[in-house]
Image 1 (cartoon, rainbow, N blue to C red):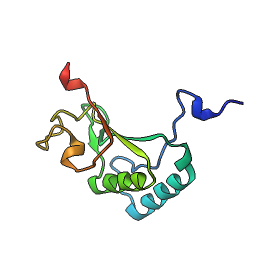
Image 2: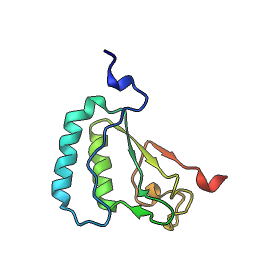
Image 3: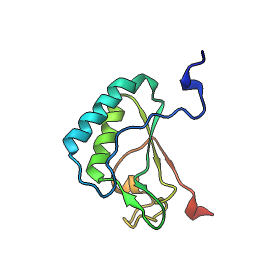
Length: 117
């Protein structure tokens, strides 16, 4: 049959912290590392949303954890896309255009849009 990699909706969900719930960073990083090892040959790009949710309940990633996730993915040669539709163009309040810039995430690509319409 046809490989699922060619399906337009094929996505792999990586382990993330649950919003508002305490987590063990070392345990989460170990799970993420195992995820990368298992799926590195299947991943074309990793998408991270530095701030996720809706405009009423926008939550941000733990900054240092997100930096570690991105660094680990880049070490495997994976390209990084930061989705800043919600928080880009200064909507995050950190004095830069993008949250990925304020946090020095160094993504390969950034998406934005809401504030330009």
